[in-house]
View (cartoon, rainbow, N blue to C red):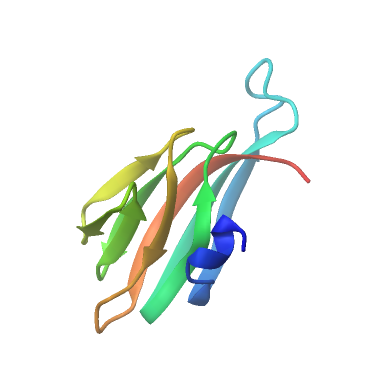
Length: 114
């Protein structure tokens, strides 16, 4: 059984792409990469999984509404409105909404164009 199978799969998650910028023309050496901003909604009982990393995809998250529980390094940390966290090359995690209202975050990251 692979490691990913030991963690919950994504359910109850809606992702809305808000904006992207092609970084190639903006910053030397960034050809093939985009700056991306998304609004992610996790319904009560929802999971953003399975466990995933952010190698080659750094970003930051900001919570607008509700509470998101971030599971990493065997520790569960709750983040509510006005809080957020970085997602760097050392991040290995999955997220869930243990609350009774939808949790909404803004996620900004750098991704490779596909």
